[in-house]
Structures are given as C-alpha cells and as structure tokens.
Image (tube, rainbow, N blue to C red; front, top):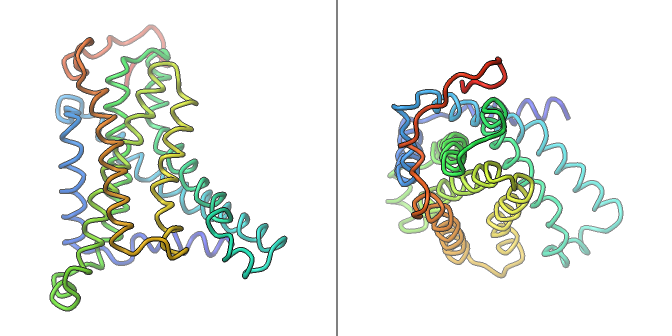
Length: 267
C-alpha cells in the first residue's frame, strides 16, 4: 500500500508539459480574478496558494487513496462485483463522499491557520477570498496533471471529443475555487463545520458524474454539461457572497495590526 501511495504521488510530477501548465494557470487566473484576491497587495496569499496545492495533493495520495481502497475492499467483502455493478449508484457513494471530505478539508487547512492566527476573528469576505486562493492552488496543480497529456494533435485526430478534457478542467477549476471560497466564508461566519460538510457534499456531487457515466445514464457530453452547470451555480453563489452590498469589500480592509502574542498576528 505504501509503495502504491508513493507511486501515485510521484505520478503527478512525471509528465509535466508547458502547454498543460500554461492552460492550468490561465484557467485558474480567469476564475480567481472574479474574486479579486489582491495577490500583490497581500503577498502571503501566494503561500496559501502553494501550501494548499501541496497539502491537498498529499491528502489525496496518503489519506483519500487508502480510504477509498479500504472502502472498496469492504464493499467487495459483503457483495459480489455483479451486485455492486447493478447497484453502482448506491455502492459508489462512500468513495465519492470520501473525495469531497478529504479534498475540501485539506484545502481548508491554510484558511484555518490564518483564522486561528487572527484570533479566530475574520471578516467573512476575506475568509471567502482566502478560501478561493486555497482552492485555486490545488485546482491549478490538478489541472496541469490532466492537461499535460492534451495536445493540438489530439484535436486534429479526434475532433470535438478531444476538447472534452479542456472543457471539463476549465469548469472543474471553477468548482474547486468556489467550494473552498464557500468553506472559508462559512468558517469566518462561525459556521465552519456546516459549510465544510456542504462543500464536501457539493464536491462529491460534482464527482458523481463519473458514476452516472459508469451506470450508462450519462454520455461524455452529458457529464461535461452536468459539471459545467454545477460549477457555474456554485461559483454564482460564492461570487454573490463576495460582491453583495452591505459590508466593505475584503481587499479594501486594512491589514490587521500584529497582536500581543505569536498566535495572534497575521502571517
């Protein structure tokens, strides 16, 4: 199991490509710009972005992967492959939920650290912005891994079908950012665990497109439309919270003054 987890971790670094990395950065920049995080006014947000990417990758490889393997083994212990295939819409739920719980939890770690160091008092819009940056970190890293195998030659060979990975990653990046933004907002509002569970469920709902495909209920086109619609709806919710009137925009607020102790000042 350890060798498999390490191999999975290494696989994210084995086939980097300039085109895949460039597309991933563009996708992330397009969606993150909607939240206006002021990365250059708050350079510590770059640390949030980078740490989120690494922490979530580590969590996927060393927590999510073994948990999903064990969940699959438990299901196979009680039911045959034929039964599980027939009931795949139910049988896949534990592994799908694990994906959301692990990834949204790990992406939220940098936000929790900032919230804790700020004396557990954080403007909700700033919490949302920090969450969006944290979500972008892993979203970009994951997207470059998927898009590194995508080339223009594939479009010439397979036509529109080859663009599906491009389409899917574009909206998956949006969803990753929105999920984490909502979780950061909920944490700042004092509803941390509630918003964590909501965003984890939404993340699982996004990944459930794989189950619909496996069950034969969705074609590839249906799945991509499903992903796009869900990503747009969740992004609209997050952006409504970000830009609604009533409180000052997060980027206009002054940086908090250093507190009296090492656990209070912002990084």
